[in-house]
Structures are given as C-alpha cells and as structure tokens.
Length: 341
Image (cartoon, rainbow, N blue to C red; front, side, top):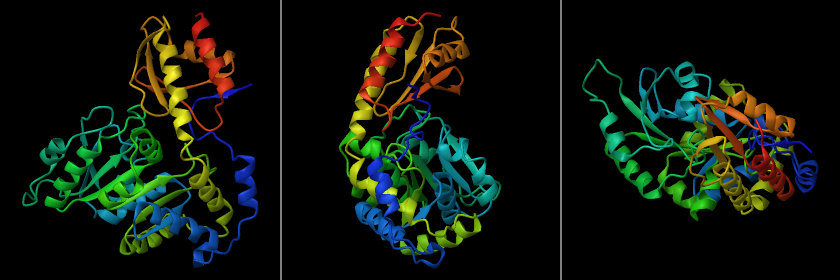
C-alpha cells in the first residue's frame, strides 16, 4: 500500500465522481455551448455571491489572468514573500503582465494591513512603480496551510479601497479555510474583487480552477484565457467533477484536517524532528534536527511506502487528502513512532 502525502493534488476521482463525469452533457465551451461548464460557473458564482465565473484548466492560469485584469505593464503587485503567485507560477506576473512585485515579510505567508499601507508607493513619484493590486493566498501553502484572520482581510480591503488597489484572492485551498474557520463563501465574495478557486486539491477533482468576479472582469478574462491557450472544447466532462466535488467533498475536508493534526502530534514526539509548524488545515511542515539528513529521512519513509516532499530550506511537507484513509494514517503514525535512521 503506497501512501502518497506529497500533495493533495494526487487524488483520483471517486467512483461516484467518475459516474457524474461520464454522464455529463457537453458542448463546445469555446462557443459558450457546454451546459455542464455553464452550470459549474453559475454554481460557484452563486455560492460566493459574485456576478459570474470562468472555468480554467489550472489555478496558475486563473491567477495569472486575474493579475492581467487588474494591472498594466510597469505597475506593481503587493503580496507575501511566500506567495504562490510570485514563487510558483513560473515568473508569470513579470512575463504575462509585465509587472513587478513588492514582497512583504509576513508571518506564515500572511501580512497585515499596516504592512500593505507602508508598501504603497507615492503615485506622483515617477521613479517608482504604481501599485495596482494586492494579492492574498488563503490557505497559505508555504505557511503550512495557515488561515488568515478575516478581520485582517477586512482591514486590508479598507486600505485597498482608500488607495484604488484591486484585491485578488488566490483561494487554491480556500474551502479548507472555510471549513476550519467556520466561514462562508459569501463573506469572501463580498470582500474580494476576484477569487480563484482550485477544484483539484482538497476537493478531489482531477483538474480545473475557476476565476470569480464581475461580468466586466470575466469578459476580460475570457479573452485573456484564449490568449493564454486555456480555451477548451467538450470540457464539461471535467466540469462535472467540479460540480460533484462542491456538492460532496467540502464538509469532509475536516477529516483531512483532523488527520493532519494526528500526524503533527506524532512528529512532535519523534526524536528526529526539531520543530513542526502549527497545523490548522491539511498541510504539515516540519524540520529535522541538523544531524539528520533530509534526503535520508525521505528515503527511509519511502522504504516504508510513505511519500513526502521537501520544500527546500530544510522544510519537509506532508499533505492529507481525500485518498488518505484512516488505515493509512495509522500506518504513518506507527512508522514515525518506530523510525530508525
């Protein structure tokens, strides 16, 4: 039995999801004629109280489209130094939109309204870029699945409004935050100009993300998606998986969170582990004592059919997900407890 904790993107469709996919009604989505895609877009927009939404093949493309909507070349985005839009999207903000990024030194990928206010450049100073966008990531990937305080997000929104800045949410794992913090989609829909939602992480769909916003913004997004090569044909087969995930895989995210906390406790009790970052959702990030080689630790786990990943800088990561069962959890805890290096 292989236990893959590298990411929550490794999940495979459940039999019920596959059945929904195979029975989907489809059309040519490039012509706006795929009924299942339209149903998914309307469903997610209604959940968040946004005017409309657009289906994308990836979260990176959805985020990069949002950045392109909100900025002009030579302008500047404000985000955390660990933000996915800066670190893990191939330099897309610079390449696709021609912008620079002002990186804030936040805590676990989260910064404050005071930091945003301090980062805003004087728009009358021709020597420095004009700020046009603040980007948030919730939950934070490199922050170990940490969840933002909604009150702080509201404070940042106020700063954005006062300074004519757009406000984008990279919500790749937003539903994990909603479940963990007992918050609602409409709270976030009312706060952010645009939101990207990933269906292929904790929600367990095989592919797909959505960008939510106003009709004007999504009309722009439609053209940008085409420009980026993201227009798809009979994609309703995949959109059906997203509909199924939203209907059946949201509340169960709490199981992933609880299992992650159990692993966290096991790591705390391991003599090889120096520290474990706080676990709020489904990501566990930890560091080993300096005398233990990261690669050796990963290899020993692999010998026990447990796969994990390195994030660099001495950080190792495990991510719980839909395909990670209670039986697998017991084995991981047992292996960690008996580990010899």
